[in-house]
Amino acid sequence: MQRRTLIIAGGLWVAVPAGLAQPARRVYRIGILTVAPTAAATGPQPQSRSTSAFLRGMRELGYTYGEHFVTEARGADDQPERFVGLAAELARLDLDVIVGAGPSLRALKQATSTTPVVMASSGDPVGEGLVRSLAHPGGNFTGLSSQTVETTGKRLELLKELVPGTAPVAVLFPRDSNRHLQAAQAVARNRGWKLLSIEIREAGEIEAAFKTATDGRASALLVHAPAVLQSHSRRVAALAIKHRLPTIFHQRGYAEAGGLIAYGADSVEIWHHAAVFVDKILKGAKPADLPVEQPTKFELVMNLKAAKALGLTIPPSLLLRADEVIQ
Image (tube, rainbow, N blue to C red; front, side, top):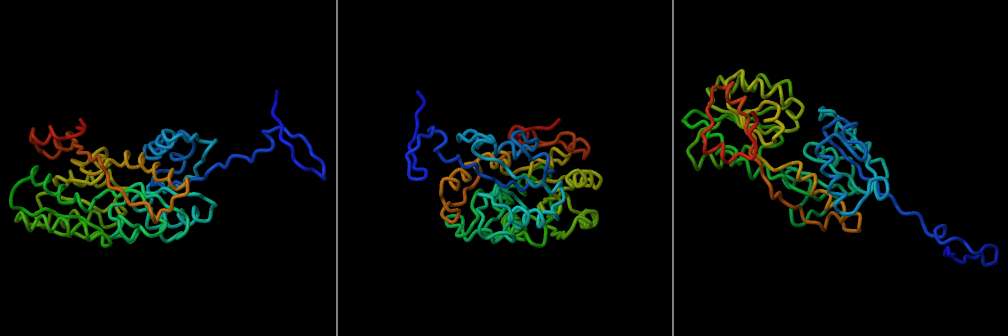
């Protein structure tokens, strides 16, 4: 027998089916800001690996796409300069939370101080002014750090293990990310290694940066310039081989694009874990009260094709430590 609920209509008690008396379930709206094309991050089965990992995390927490939440994706299509406009667009929507990573986070910081933002990896959330501290974010941002500053020294050590000698290592960094340079300099001082610092401000300076490295007789190159180089990974990898510079990066995408070696946090896993923060916020938690977490999984990726093109033999001890070797 169908259950009914009594409600008052015009002073009379009227029997109404129970389902009609219940308020509709709220469908949460989650913004996604990514470097991938918008189409690749849209819908319940996105092509983007990072967005797909995030949705997988939401499913594991009991959320069904279309029933409990939907996403509003905006993608820069490998053009980081578009983030400012896209972030402003998302900020104007009635969203419950926005998820972004890397260079998109600064644009989101400018766009909104009220909508909760979950960082699906920030290289330096405190240094970039996104949060007050890891333990007490204090604003509308929380999420995960990718620890790229803390692991800069490790990347330098891996590079020197691969290319020993007294020649300097060139460090390519953007003007607004000198903490990565400082981290490399600290390790170099302790080890007695020489560095050649090369600042890059825009993509048009990439070729000149490589020329500066070769003119300075650098033996290898340590790269950290995500906002500038993110959409030019293949070009950077090709230039490294052209200039005979063994190069290490902080993201596996560069190794997949032809770069020699990459070491850093597993970005796909970070996007997957970002769902935990979104879940807490949807249940009422404030970003200011959710400590920023650090990654638990790091990956070392090597590209043997790049090594061959450079005429470089990777030591077996280093190959054995690799999480993935690209043939």
